Structures are given as C-alpha cells and as structure tokens.
Length: 221
Image (cartoon, rainbow, N blue to C red; front, side, top):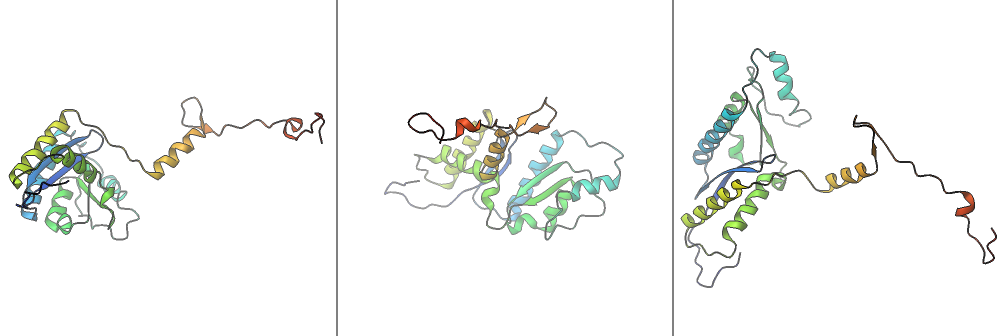
C-alpha cells in the first residue's frame, strides 16, 4: 500500500483470525501485539463458542474407536503429537502454522481435552493455511486507499471489514494444480447411473480408407 509523503510509522496492528472455509465465516480480533498471553485466551474463548454450537458427541463411544478417529489424522507424520490416554470424541480440526506459540503444551493439551485435533502447515508453507488468504482480503478491503494515523484506527477498520465480510461470506475450496488435474481427469470420464462408477469414453476408430492420404486423382496411394 502506498503512503503519502507525510506518513510516519506510528505502531503496528495484528489480526487474530479463525476461519471456517466451508461457510466462509471469520472470527477475528485486532491487537497491537500477539504474545501467548494474548493469543491463547482468545483462541480458547472462540473455540469454546464454536464447540458450544456443534452437536453433542454420542454417549458411550468405544474408547478404541475414539482413538482410531484421532490417529487417522496423524498417520504418516514423521513426528505426530503424543495423544493423551483419555481422549474425548473428536469434534474439530484446527489448522495452524508452525509458530512456537501454537505448539505450547498448555494450548495443545487444552485443545485435546476439548476434542480439537491440531494440524500444522509445513515449514515454509504458511500459504497453505486459508486464514492467510482471508487476511489478505480483509486487509485490502479495510486499508486500500486509506491512510490510518495510528494502530487503533487500523484495528477499527480491520474489524469493520470482518463484520462486513460476515454479512455475505464466501466459502473457500481447495484449488491449485492438483485440483486442476483432478478436474481434467473428471472430464475424461463418463459417469454411470450415479453410482460412482465411471468409464473412459472410447473414441471410435476411423476407417482405414478415411485415414490414408489420397493423391490428386482421389485414388488411395
């Protein structure tokens, strides 16, 4: 964002963000700094509100079934987090980047106790976290063409942009090169009666006489 020549750096602002891709809803809070003492209470508060709106897990689930449900999300990881012995039913997946604060034992154990499984984007791959994408949209809507004078004004505009977004949110879906390859593969298949089975369309062979070149007199060479 270009600044006028009178611009003086007068502090910074950060946007704590929780994003639900399937609905497009955003939960966000503007702050001037983001130590664990600020981030963790906000995360716990917002996650508690989200969990309160989810259907209650069924009672009397087999502990072995519960553990398998958790373990499936950590299968194949080189360093999966140690799961506690007493696990509640899995209720939510929370994707975060690899900040040290996101891996603090207090936060991790609290999330596990609430039925929240934590997944982390690869090192150097924070762009895989959709929260980064929605933050860019919110930032552009709030600050493009504007010249805030202080962090409080930045926070006010960011939070106003979040409220505006949530009035008509846009769901996100995964895209990229892999999704494009899958789309091309689907177009090469022919679905069969809605069962999930499919075939590859077979192109009819062109008759030999139509494929061979002809001379100027119309006779086959």
